[in-house]
Image 1 (cartoon, helix red, strand yellow):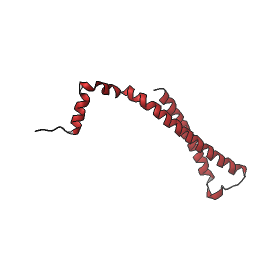
Image 2 (tube, helix red, strand yellow):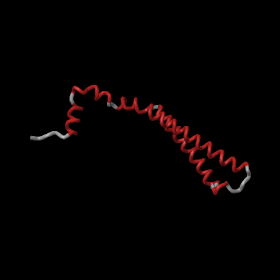
Image 3 (cartoon, helix red, strand yellow):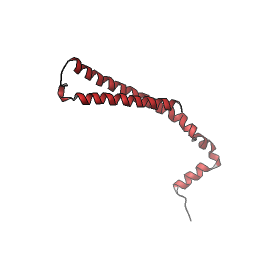
Image 4 (cartoon, one colour):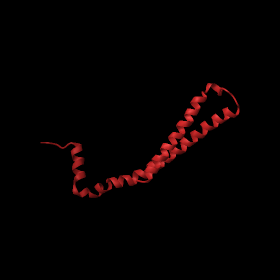
Length: 105
Protein backbone atom coordinates (compact mmCIF):
# COMPACT_ATOMS: atom_id res chain seq x y z
CA UNK A 1 0.00 0.00 0.00
CA UNK A 2 1.39 3.40 -1.01
CA UNK A 3 0.90 6.21 1.50
CA UNK A 4 0.89 9.87 0.60
CA UNK A 5 3.47 12.14 2.11
CA UNK A 6 2.31 15.13 4.08
CA UNK A 7 3.42 17.39 1.21
CA UNK A 8 1.39 15.43 -1.32
CA UNK A 9 -1.67 15.60 0.93
CA UNK A 10 -1.34 19.36 1.34
CA UNK A 11 -0.80 19.91 -2.38
CA UNK A 12 -3.77 17.69 -3.26
CA UNK A 13 -6.03 19.62 -0.88
CA UNK A 14 -4.71 22.95 -2.19
CA UNK A 15 -5.44 22.11 -5.79
CA UNK A 16 -8.78 20.55 -4.97
CA UNK A 17 -11.61 22.62 -6.46
CA UNK A 18 -13.27 22.97 -3.05
CA UNK A 19 -10.43 25.28 -1.97
CA UNK A 20 -11.05 27.90 -4.64
CA UNK A 21 -11.38 30.71 -2.06
CA UNK A 22 -7.99 29.83 -0.58
CA UNK A 23 -6.41 29.99 -4.02
CA UNK A 24 -7.95 33.38 -4.70
CA UNK A 25 -6.67 34.81 -1.42
CA UNK A 26 -3.11 33.72 -2.26
CA UNK A 27 -2.89 35.53 -5.58
CA UNK A 28 -0.11 38.03 -6.11
CA UNK A 29 -2.35 41.12 -5.93
CA UNK A 30 -3.85 39.78 -2.70
CA UNK A 31 -0.43 39.25 -1.19
CA UNK A 32 0.68 42.72 -2.31
CA UNK A 33 -2.41 44.30 -0.77
CA UNK A 34 -1.29 42.95 2.59
CA UNK A 35 2.47 43.28 2.21
CA UNK A 36 2.82 46.79 0.79
CA UNK A 37 1.22 48.68 3.72
CA UNK A 38 3.24 46.70 6.26
CA UNK A 39 6.46 47.22 4.32
CA UNK A 40 5.71 50.92 3.87
CA UNK A 41 5.27 51.29 7.61
CA UNK A 42 8.55 49.46 8.31
CA UNK A 43 10.46 51.62 5.82
CA UNK A 44 8.96 54.78 7.29
CA UNK A 45 10.01 53.69 10.79
CA UNK A 46 13.54 53.03 9.54
CA UNK A 47 13.65 56.48 7.91
CA UNK A 48 12.75 58.04 11.25
CA UNK A 49 15.53 56.12 13.01
CA UNK A 50 18.05 57.05 10.33
CA UNK A 51 17.13 60.75 10.50
CA UNK A 52 17.44 60.66 14.29
CA UNK A 53 20.92 59.13 13.96
CA UNK A 54 21.91 61.75 11.38
CA UNK A 55 20.78 64.50 13.75
CA UNK A 56 22.90 62.98 16.52
CA UNK A 57 25.98 62.82 14.28
CA UNK A 58 25.34 66.39 13.10
CA UNK A 59 25.07 67.59 16.69
CA UNK A 60 28.32 65.91 17.69
CA UNK A 61 30.20 67.29 14.68
CA UNK A 62 28.82 70.80 15.25
CA UNK A 63 29.61 70.71 18.94
CA UNK A 64 33.20 69.74 18.22
CA UNK A 65 33.52 72.43 15.51
CA UNK A 66 31.96 75.20 17.61
CA UNK A 67 34.14 74.36 20.57
CA UNK A 68 37.09 74.85 18.20
CA UNK A 69 38.81 71.74 19.40
CA UNK A 70 41.22 70.08 17.04
CA UNK A 71 40.57 66.65 18.45
CA UNK A 72 37.17 65.20 19.34
CA UNK A 73 36.75 64.14 22.97
CA UNK A 74 37.19 60.53 24.15
CA UNK A 75 39.30 59.50 21.20
CA UNK A 76 36.55 59.91 18.60
CA UNK A 77 37.77 60.45 15.07
CA UNK A 78 36.31 63.50 13.36
CA UNK A 79 36.73 61.77 10.01
CA UNK A 80 34.73 58.75 11.19
CA UNK A 81 32.01 61.00 12.59
CA UNK A 82 31.71 62.82 9.27
CA UNK A 83 31.62 59.51 7.38
CA UNK A 84 28.91 58.20 9.71
CA UNK A 85 26.88 61.35 9.05
CA UNK A 86 27.30 60.97 5.29
CA UNK A 87 26.35 57.28 5.48
CA UNK A 88 23.25 58.13 7.49
CA UNK A 89 22.11 60.68 4.93
CA UNK A 90 22.78 58.28 2.05
CA UNK A 91 20.82 55.58 3.85
CA UNK A 92 17.95 58.02 4.35
CA UNK A 93 17.97 58.94 0.65
CA UNK A 94 17.92 55.27 -0.36
CA UNK A 95 15.02 54.54 1.99
CA UNK A 96 13.05 57.50 0.64
CA UNK A 97 13.51 56.24 -2.94
CA UNK A 98 12.43 52.80 -1.81
CA UNK A 99 9.37 54.26 -0.09
CA UNK A 100 8.32 56.16 -3.22
CA UNK A 101 8.63 53.00 -5.31
CA UNK A 102 6.62 51.03 -2.78
CA UNK A 103 3.83 53.55 -2.98
CA UNK A 104 3.65 53.22 -6.77
CA UNK A 105 3.05 49.45 -6.66
